[in-house]
Length: 126
Image 1 (cartoon, rainbow, N blue to C red):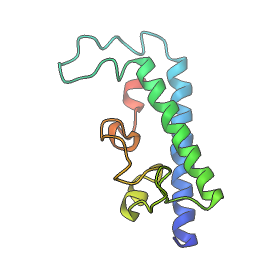
Image 2 (cartoon, rainbow, N blue to C red; image 1 turned 90 degrees about the vertical axis):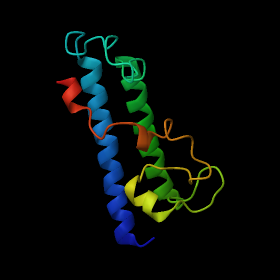
Image 3 (spheres, rainbow, N blue to C red; image 1 turned 45 degrees about the vertical axis):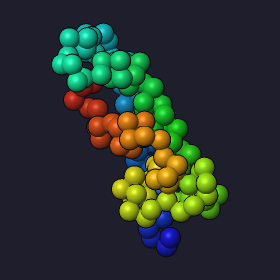
Image 4 (cartoon, one colour; image 1 turned 135 degrees about the vertical axis):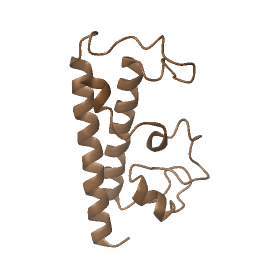
């Protein structure tokens, strides 16, 4: 991967880490009135996943994953699967720079951080 692309991806990873950290701080500081109980949402809505504790857990994992990806840039291992060492598809790396595993080793889509969450949580926290 060329230096320009790596620098761009590093910037995106810093953005992901900053956004996750900022949202974690806002979520932890939100009152119960700002974060209502979602138990009466439609059947398809996973209230447990998107409860306050579920969002905190998701954001902590997303922050951790972004920081690990930044460490992998420093180690010269960015773009290589953490599990098998094979190259992660370039398109996937550019779409989801916090991806740490190749398609063969990735968890199911519902467990994959970069595919399972909304791009922003701002509306639900304000």
